[in-house]
Length: 100
Figure 1 (cartoon, helix red, strand yellow):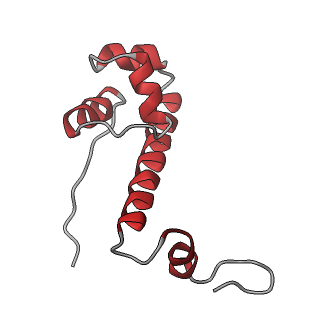
Figure 2: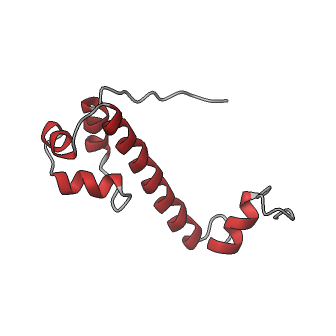
């Protein structure tokens, strides 16, 4: 549902219209692509904040600069192992917290 000034007040309505209802293959693909894009941008921002080049990050994580670029641009999603190596190389950590 959109208001008159085009501010979204119900994202599910927009996502349903564009990608199909939750639980459909189209919606799952769109969500996976969004997760890849946003996680890539988070890693890219962290790398830039740490003042590390893609080449240096690749060296630290035993991969290639082009692979790091693809991750940062949401083209591919790294394996869990590589994700943890990237996070560690950037001086970060992953914390898993149980919610209610």
